[in-house]
Amino acid sequence: MKNKLNLLLLISFLIAVFLTIWLFNQITSSVGDIAFNKELDKSTFKVCDEKRINQYYSVKSNYQNGKRGLKKDLWNSIESLTFKNSGYITFRFVINCNGETGRFRVKTVDSELKINYFNAEKIKTLQSFIENLEKWDVKKWNDRTFDSYFHLTFKVNNGKITDVF
Image 1 (cartoon, rainbow, N blue to C red):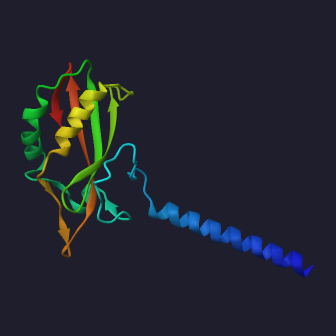
Image 2: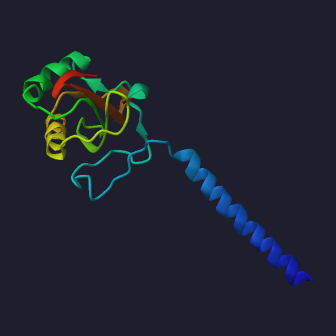
Image 3: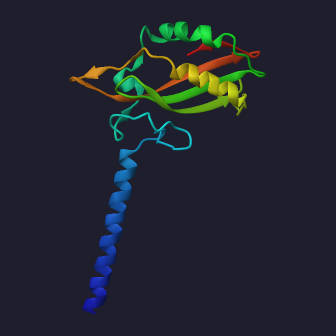
């Protein structure tokens, strides 16, 4: 009888430990976190704090002179890029505490927000234009800079990029 009780207590303890670890992982991770993927991401890109990558609006990460400055620096590169269809191309990526970008993820949809496929090489070209931007404004708080997520959406109308937001 004593052995059965000890076994039951051990199993209960192990279940409690497992649930505690599972709950901790659920609480500390967020929907949309971009984990490093060796098949997609450059190994040279490093975040400063893997456990704390903030949303852009939390730390007010932006580009110098805001979206206007971003459009100005991108426009000469992207205006000649053409596509076969219309829709939206959204890049989500990380800006590390040094103002470098990486961990790019892309989603494409048509004007009805249904999956839309754009030419993969042109998507890579567009991504390289973003990667070459160097005026990311990393905000400080209490003398500390943070990694943050950022997103850019390109509106494609009749095969041409007509807006960046």
